Amino acid sequence: MSSSLSKRAWKEKLTSEQYKIAREGGTERAFTGEYWDHDGNGVYRCVCCGAELFDSTTKYKSGSGWPSFWDVVDQGNVELHEDRSLGMRRVEVTCASCDAHLGHVFDDGPEPTGKRYCINSASLAFSERDNASSGHSADSSAASET
Ligand SMILES: [Zn+2]
Image 1 (spheres, helix red, strand yellow):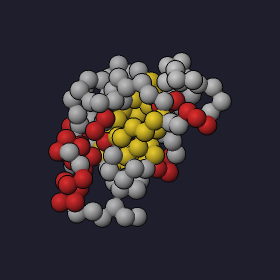
Image 2 (image 1 turned 90 degrees about the vertical axis):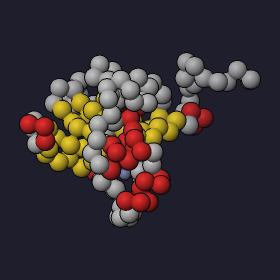
Image 3 (image 1 turned 180 degrees about the horizontal axis):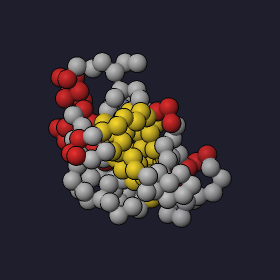
């Protein structure tokens, strides 16, 4: 895997907020990130390497102030690590391709998985799904010119 960008290269590629969170394991303040209340139709990718991590169809409103998902796009795209910092036992979620810190996963999520992936907006980059290929249009489609 090509995850061996130097510190300096990451700093050039990312904003300082993204760097602090994705590369140094920081956490953005609740209700301040770009995506906690974001409601698009598409895929959330790793801000560092572009790997597909979470799908908007598994995003839900947890009330935590961070983007929350009950599943990942592919279990192989993330890695889980036990995190005993701050006197708590939590499970850290990182990007399997580039080691970016994403957030934590908890066992109080909704069905069908019961998982709550609590992810920093700063570690994610949203890409809109191409609706042209799906048969039906979304309720707020921009097809007014036809
Ligand atoms: Zn990555």
